[in-house]
Amino acid sequence: MSQAEARLARSLSAIPHGIVVFDADGAIAFRNKVAARYLSARHSEALVDEAIRDLAEGVLADHAPAAPSRAVDLFGPPRRALVLTAVRLEQRSEDLGALVLIDDVTDRRRLESIRRDFVANISHELKTPVGALGLLAETIGTEDDPEVARRLAARMMQEAFRVARTIDDLLELSQIEADPDGHHEDVPIPGLIAEAVDRVAGAAAQQGISIQQEAVPVALSVAGDRRQLVSAIYNLLDNAVKYSNSGSSVSVSALTDGRSVEVRVADHGVGVPRRDLERVFERFYRVDRARSRETGGTGLGLAIVRNIAENHGGSVHVESTEGTGSTFTLRLPARMGGAPKATDG
Ligand code: ADP
Image (cartoon, rainbow, N blue to C red; front, side, top):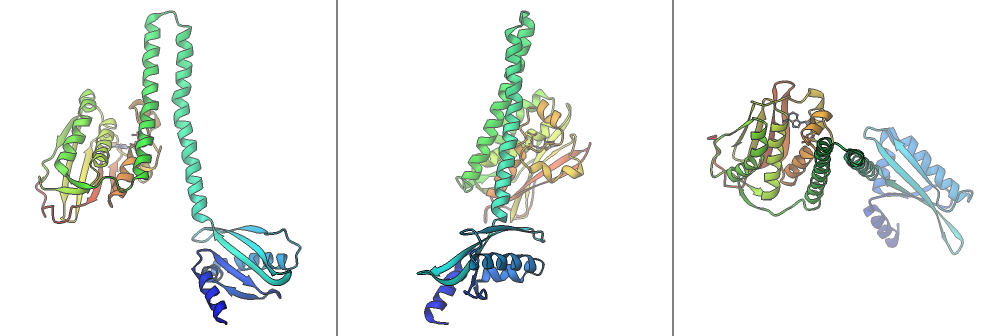
């Protein structure tokens, strides 16, 4: 291999796409590392190899369109979607061979499909209350009884609040995603919990639910975005209240093992069925649509909590028994050197 060829081979190996070069006789002259990986994977070898040769033969024999391409789906595992494109290599009409590019579009397809689903979900979530608003306005327009008109207007207000809440949550979610680092500072846990409890206190009182705030070590703190962290704890508390019955109690506590801090929100409410435990953190996923709607839910609260937890290098988990209650645990890395070893909560 000449020096120039070696340089070219090195450059082609640095490209994140698979590249296979054929000489004018249709023999493989070069393949970069990425291409070798696809070709050596046992389950995909035959399929990808055959498609590559087919495309190359096509352009070499000149009975193919300018740059033919072909989609190849590998059923794995892992499942992958590839797009192969062939081009003829020529110099001053001299045939030098063909090049086949292997583009792995798996992640792109997955993101596209998530985005499509998300847009479809948003449209659906907004269409329902907006449709209701239209109908209510139409009915009020023909209603003579002022008492009925007042009731319909109250319903309209409820639906309008629902749209506003969904938009607020969507904005919060996109803000968190757009600025994953947020504004990082030292945030004491007791203050965070007190602020979140304060925010939910009105709704809790209205529903006859008491909130027990366990004692938290004063020195316990995390590094993070204060506004986001309050929002995460508030969302967990808000759910605990929403999915509990009147007269019930909700508790919030925090403990640490020195490395991480766990904020726990426990309720004695309706609980989450086992099959839904993982899915409740997905955007717009609800176990009980009617209850979520009744309580003014947007289906975005836990997605917001999960995003915030991940932005802070943490996680969120749920343990629950249907009909008995749930405990949501927000785990965050403890501020280095700041947290005491034991819990005195
Ligand atoms: P929502 O606005 O509907 O409450 P969330 O994203 O906050 O949306 O929660 C998703 C779903 O998870 C809820 O609709 C509810 O079915 C379930 N859920 C969340 N928190 C609790 C809880 N503390 N107890 C029982 N179910 C819960």
